[in-house]
Image 1 (cartoon, rainbow, N blue to C red):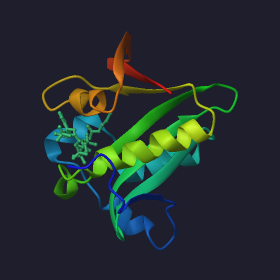
Image 2 (tube, helix red, strand yellow):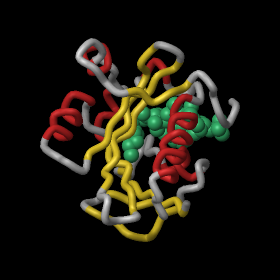
Image 3 (tube, rainbow, N blue to C red):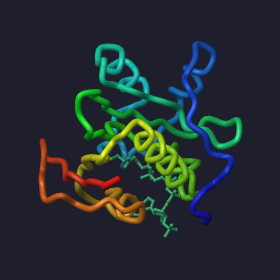
Length: 149
Ligand SMILES: CC(C)(COP(=O)(O)OP(=O)(O)OC[C@H]1O[C@@H](n2cnc3c(N)ncnc32)[C@H](O)[C@@H]1OP(=O)(O)O)[C@@H](O)C(=O)NCCC(=O)NCCS
């Protein structure tokens, strides 16, 4: 696997793409780690701090990212992150997270935070390989990790 995959991009979701994007799903046993894309887009509609994009590999939508961005703060939060089950394990998750990191860094973020639900299949090692480290905090049962930028 290469650290950067040139075919991976973050794209705005449009009227034409929202349906196929909402069909992207994680494995049934992974559902406890992340909400569905449809639920996240619905929530984003009522959350001014939400910033979301579809993750593409070439011209195919393969995943979804939603951040919480509060302009007065320099802390940014990965709210939702997923790669569809049939696209996992090909480096797309890593490549897209590198783009997310680049994006928040360009906005002046000092730290990128996230929380994950602990348990079998948890994404801890995925985030550690990207440089995130546990802060020691637990919020609403989620283990908080941070990346200094
Ligand atoms: C976690 C997730 C986004 C990873 O996406 P992906 O495209 O499969 O990951 P990549 O192929 O880019 O993997 C990058 C590295 O992380 C590792 N990795 C990926 N998922 C992992 C997991 N769940 N546990 C441990 N390691 C993992 C890979 O083995 C790879 O390691 P390598 O570079 O040493 O080969 C994806 O599995 C997913 O959507 N999971 C379900 C939802 C979820 O847990 N989201 C996070 C909510 S906080």
